[in-house]
Image (cartoon, rainbow, N blue to C red; front, side):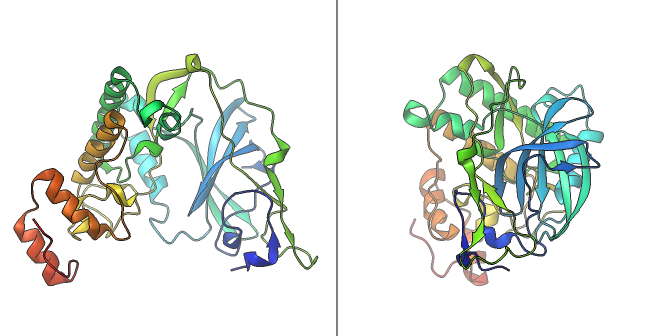
Length: 327
């Protein structure tokens, strides 16, 4: 892994240290992927295991989103592609929740200086609900729209359940609005580019990009945002009956099974649906994250009126809890 402290970086972006063998692929504007089919236009975001880009499909003459994974994925390797294939190819297109789920458009592998990267092509959508509510008074939508979104989200979960899939990471950052038109792509703003250079003046190491790009924050007129959502990001998803040992989700949304180290089931989606609906209506999550998810246990007891005693005893025996929480 490279020493990012030896570099000058001009903008807030992903960790430069992850541009190494097995890490991020160095992407630059106007790069062509998949034999020239997709042209990179802007950066939409990034996560621990991927960067996400706005691209133009030169064949279909449409805009798409491309998620480029790190070359060596330590968690859920290629699982997201398998899940997207399952919900795109095996689901019933007449199900009312079908249209509220992000579907796979294309996938391919790209060879780069840091390794072989899985690239997933998805529909380009509008803003995250979390981005919208953060600009609103009291951080919540009006009651009518909150009910509508909650209903659509429930249909989306019912649809993926019919495909044998558990999402595993439902929160407002993974629910996006559709917009009426995506033909209006803003002109790229050069101030979001930060040149990457070594402080000693020597050449950048292999696999390090020439520059980093601060993710774009598109703004839409209220009239452009449709009252229709898509559930996205299946990076933590799993097939029913084949759960992972853990989930990398926001701590405030950790379900009891995750906190008490019980086997994970499709019930985790129901828990997160409840938490997300609460946040839509109230403007905050029902539980607050601390330094450790065990700090959620007293909150579970206060909000829910108790936790099964056997779960507490099992947690004490397993060392998950060191003392019995106050009732």
